[in-house]
Length: 144
Image 1: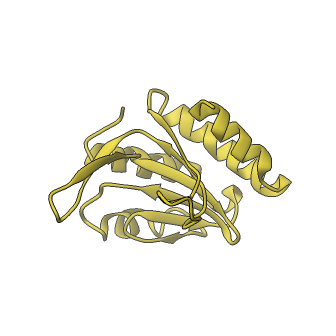
Image 2: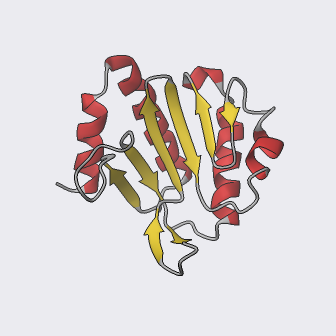
């Protein structure tokens, strides 16, 4: 199954309310990162155990680990959770950048070093989210 097919199957599997929100957010991400590599992570580790919610990812950057190893990963990811939606913006070294720059402007969202959590898209300012995503992609040095 292609990445696009995996994403479509995941979105179709979600309850209607989450499906509509995630479909809209996915289309929004595609509009602001049109050339980004697509990822789908099913939430399972190498042993097949579920360790997280499934994620849709966009773009690519390299995660460098303390032990000297590295691996490619998405720059921006989205995930539906029981409490709402998470947007992950990876690769920003300053963990205060997102909350300090966008926390107050986003609307009804909890903003951490790399994650923006909110219940519904209508709760946040999409223009500010777009700026935060593009800013994060610029900081992490990618866009592909």
